[in-house]
Amino acid sequence: MPAVIPPVVGHDDGYFWDGVAAGRLLLQRCADCGRLRQPPSPMCPNCRSLRTDTQESSGKGTVYSWILSHHPTEADAQPRIVVLVDLEEGVRLVSNLIEVDESEVDNGMAVEVCFRQFDGGVTLPQFRPVGR
Ligand code: ZN
Image (cartoon, rainbow, N blue to C red):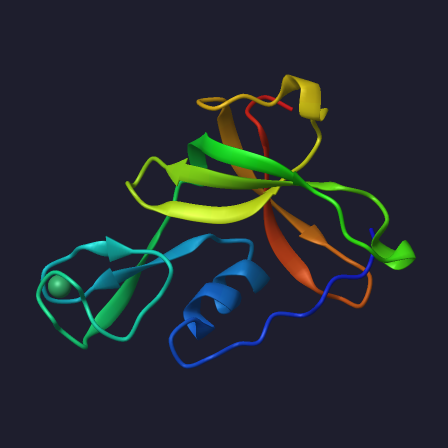
């Protein structure tokens, strides 16, 4: 796998990267009203609580939208399918779609998370079509 830029782990998303390291896709949940939110944020937009916990995602969802991204460097010459996934828990996540040719990608396609380790030891959640 090619190298990727390592994530910058902040106060609000440390749980996410701890989950990724353990092969789990964790979502931020308000500890007061229970609403899930993605991307992570310090305050619940529903009840303004600052208390958070997490919920593990099934990792299953559908493609909401996607693009084919071309990077302008030789070190990262392969285009990537960047995808917006509607997780079945009701939040949307940006990721990459792998193990599929761009000609097969369509909005509404059923996808599931998988975890890939890249050169340099960075692990990222990726998505692939269900059943691959
Ligand atoms: Zn809340």
